[in-house]
Length: 360
Ligand code: GLY
Image (spheres, rainbow, N blue to C red):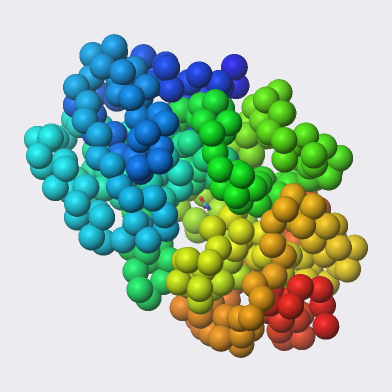
């Protein structure tokens, strides 16, 4: 059973990656958190599938738990739902030793994480990711937050979990589109730090798309191990951690331009990875990325959008320093660098490609 240790300024925590892990949530949480009052935050779909199992497991371990059920979708990552979680915590009489359990995908994890970061100036957080995207990325590393009309994740906090429990069984019930969207972040890890993983995805594409159980543990563990190494060295995104944003400058602009409605986050990231391939100036790399992304059933372009408007939207992203967008640029498969020089020509070709696909 893979267990990965993550070091952080607020203490180390473990990421348990295994089928059936939700059944052990209570026992694992008992060792990781101080109090015994738990508020499980989830969405309507996940509540139906996994809510009972999570509450039962917590109860068996001596927690008194209640569930806060939110609407599903990116639009839930908004101030009014943060406020509703604060009300839930108040009703639960949650004190400093209460624990928020985020049971769901990235939206639930980010929002519930921000509620935990702000309630009583910060209470314990347990992440129980139920989507591939949340397992390999959002649940690890302590980024929490909500979207504002002015941009994605603009209000937030770094708040590390005390424990991450990734139950691979939850991937079986994940809708096809959500699953494929998560694969975009897996491709990202291949591009930034694991050429072997990228090659594996190319070779075993069909088995990965078919969610072969043996493969999933390996794929998730490799991504989490990579993320753990990055966030241990740069928890607050002073430099190195920005590499995890490969493709996200494009992706966030596409999400904002389509009001978070047309694309799932991972789909927008998939388009962004292809655009980042253009930034590399390496046609072979660009071709491999595009072939893998489309082969996994992900989009490689956001048809109908205006590349210039997207570029302007990207200018209001957090990744902008002194008016310049700090792109993450692939050097080769398995290596990317942050904030390197990008020629104006490649930059504009990349934004064009984000909309039109292959280079003009
Ligand atoms: N999702 C990018 C990061 O955690 O830094």
